[in-house]
Length: 278
Image 1: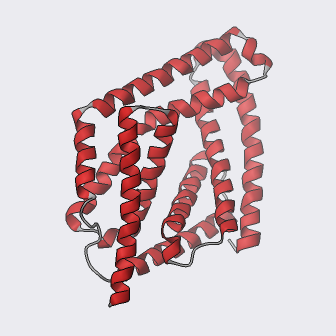
Image 2: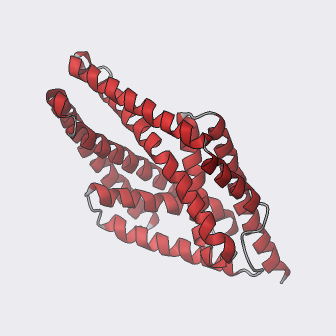
Image 3: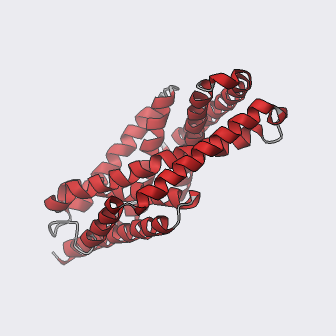
C-alpha cells in the first residue's frame, strides 16, 4: 500500500510540474507575445495534454473534461500565429542567397507574409488581453492547486505503461510502410511527438526508452515537421495568383526540398527499424 501511494504521489508530482511549466509560459505570453514564447507554450500544452490523456480514466471526473477543453482552447488560440511564423521563416530561408530574392514579385510576397505574420501576432495580443483568456488562465491556476488523480492505487502507472506500449506497437506498424501523403506524414509526426513526450514525462517511473532511441525519434519528428511546413507553404504559394511566376519557381524549390526530406525520412525510419526493432 505504501508503494502504491508513493507511485501515486510521483505521478501527481509529475503532473504538477507540467502544470506549473504551462502556467509559467502562459503568464509570460500574456505579458509579451514572441515567437519563442508561442513555441514554448505550445510544447507545454502538448506535453500536459499527452500526460493527462494517458491517465484520463483516473482523473477527477469534475476536472477531466473542462481541463482538457481549456488546453485545447489555448492551443487553438496560438495556431494562427504559429503558422504565420513558420511560413515567414521558411520563405526567408528559401530565397536567402537565391537569385529569386532580387525579383520584385519575391519582395511583394515577402511583404505580404510579413503583414500576415504581424496581423496574426496582433490578433494573439488582443486574445491574451481579453477577459476570456484571463479567466481561463485563472481557472487553470486554481485547479492546479488540487490533485488531478482521483484515487490512491498504482492503476494509473499500469495504464501509462499500457498506453506507451500500444503507441510503440502502432508506431512500429506505421514505420514499416510509410505513407507519403502529407496528411498521413503529419499524423505520423504527431504520433511520434506524443510517444516522445509520454516517454520523457513518465520514463523515470517506467522503463524509459534508451536515449539513442529518443534522439532517433526526435530527428525523425524534426524532418517530418520540416516536410509539413514545406507542404503548408506550397499551398500558400499556390494561392498567390497575382505573383504566379515567382510562386511557381518557389514551388519547384519546395518540391525539391520535399523530395530530399522524404529520402531522409525513409532513411531515418529504416535506421529506427534496424536499431530498435521498429
